[in-house]
Length: 208
Length: 258
View 1 (cartoon, rainbow over the protein chains, first blue to last red):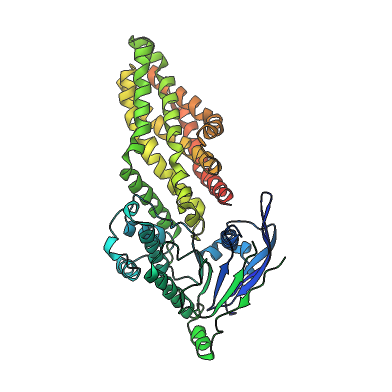
View 2 (view 1 turned 30 degrees about the vertical axis):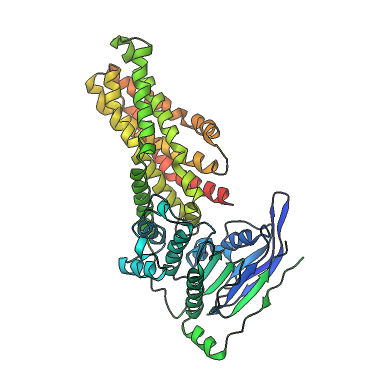
């Protein structure tokens, strides 16, 4: 079996009149992390959403294990986790309920694994509070607890450190390090470089 | 213009590479079992039901609307039961149609806003099943309560008691179709701000067969005639809807997420 790689070939994406992605080209190997940087509006989120297959590029393609993702999109989706810049949480459910539904739709979740993930994200203390009563940083931590549960080969993270304190940023670093250590791949759109401890990082700067 | 990836940080050392290879995904099957499509759909249904009971205001709105409209007719037209009985089928069905439309706007809106739909689309699960689950939740929360309330509304419009079971059945089946048609409309109008008007324009014409057969079945039930044919047609529409509408809704959601 070939090692899993994510390759993006000559991606062009238009949103209306705007040429958002202008020939983006890169590949990320198994066990490494790509940091995508760029000014606001340079297309970081669009790039991640195109890699997911949510947006269709006008030109170019995305390859996962040397195969076009559009050939079997749902198998590709099963092997990726995407965390957008807003945590996908419901305000009227508690943190724990949110994770049970969000992650449970993909994979079986055991209560103790859920507790462990919440504890790791430092979210154990407020796990049973409704998410709308939590601060933005606390919500982000709940989303990270969800990410910790998603043991899939490819993580696509959009601004994973937004709203987090220093310790929270280290948590993101350690989650990514774990993902790389178990042979996973990470693509993260970031404003600030990821915390130390994440090795095997390459960087892609999108032009404004 | 082309932006290339440049290597910063350090490359993997030989030891790390070996470790990475040893834990490659192909050798190490995911420790978590994937949820089956059915389990995923059940969770999506449970989530929507739980959320609805946390936001009771939204839940009560279409029911209150239905009750008010059917109660206003006796006041506006005449308290004479014979006359009310004549218009009762039409009133019940128009009220049920509008009440179910009223609740549609909320079907996907919150989920689109908070990224839940995105996660559904990227879950690797069949989006069709998840849409089916969402529509089923919508029916359980609007169609079914409307059907259960229909006898009360019917009695206030002078409908004879023997006709009530048939009316409950017709409204229950009819609202299944309305929810399914509505799920397509709601999914198509996700990208539109203040989509209420557009949503009605889109779904009302498609809902007309339900209105016609439903009102006909109710009329026959009130008059004591054989109501088999219109009820069967409603049932056929429901079967058609159950098979096709979730597929269409899933496709529409994918389009609107782009």
